[in-house]
Length: 183
Image 1 (tube, one colour):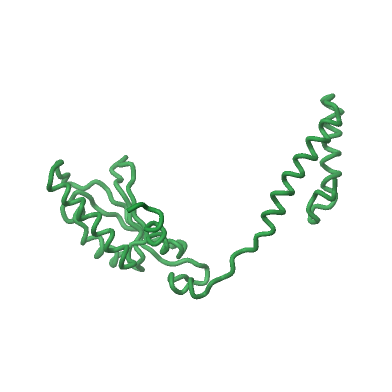
Image 2 (image 1 turned 180 degrees about the horizontal axis):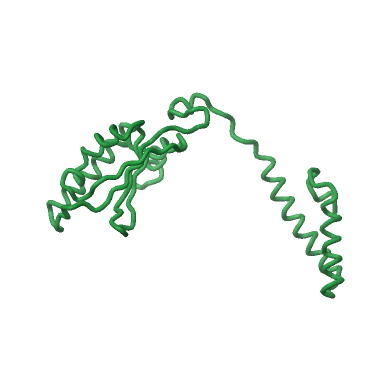
């Protein structure tokens, strides 16, 4: 049994068998059935461990880190913006449609410029409508970008700002999204 257990767990096979022997004595289950179950479980676990151990960790890529604006931890500063229902709900119709068309065009423009790392809607509960994650260092910069959005200009939504320190990999969301969404 020990040959099935990784070397960092010496004697683990005997410990498992001993535990199953005790279970057999206390519950009157046939020991052979317990031993077979233990062997199958250990083979499955060690197989998964062996597969996981054969994949080396990805190598640090300093050029990628620099291109994403990452610090030594692979992180960077962002501003997280919560969009909430504003004071001026525009009624359904062509004007509202145009406002949201402009909202989506504005997000596309900012994402293309590398200023908007991620965006998306919420369920609308408690007035929470959506969020932006801006790839900027200050809340003031985020306010300037948000002020260009038609839903903010028209009062359909208002913005709440929070500094965020997160993975620089968020900067790859736009490129990845373009590659996985159908035109």
